[in-house]
Image (tube, rainbow, N blue to C red):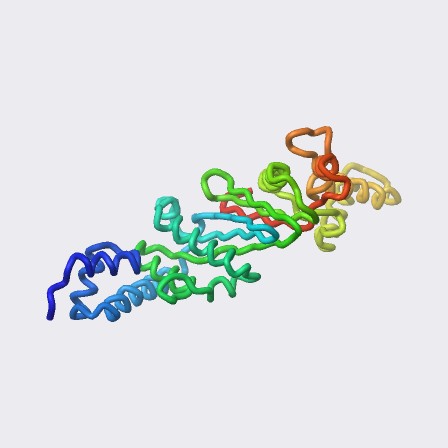
Length: 275
């Protein structure tokens, strides 16, 4: 058997992301067969993934990007903040985001099946990385939006990101302000019409119960509940929210200062923090 060279170990490490000693041991076990060594390392990742499947992956890295009319967010999750901040982990998250952007992919399933380097899928690369770190990892979230214009915002720390789509071209800084609004204020919908019916029913019932406990007459409860809903809309629907940089304006009014017809058509927000 030919001697294992430093160049071979280095190449295997670059492909798999494993440590130098792990790569050397894999080459030794494979009798210097490079393909077998890669398979040994990948099986290690699969074994670790199976062993830690019941662990909670609550930490991770959240990244976002926009290109013209398409924007996407990727959240790669792991067990500890130490791994989440590792440069190789962040780089893998970025590679996954790049694949999403390149294909303008619509679903998480499509992204997991997308090809990264060495002809292997995103899912395969995540499994490989599990073998390196010994931690559970998973593609926790994937979201995308499309529109005449889009913007992305990543909050410092890579734990929170937002993407927004608009109905017409918009100044990038104006768009970024709206993405920051989404990140900070966590709206549930763009407009009241988009709030799910079950949420409205719950808010109405909560308002009625509060009014009853306060001794309000039954014949006024529905009116009180509708008033509470209007307050809910102002606090939780993006276009009706107070603009965070000028409380005298709603977000819709701020947008209309830029263009009378400018509005938001969609947004997504992903966080690994507790809201």
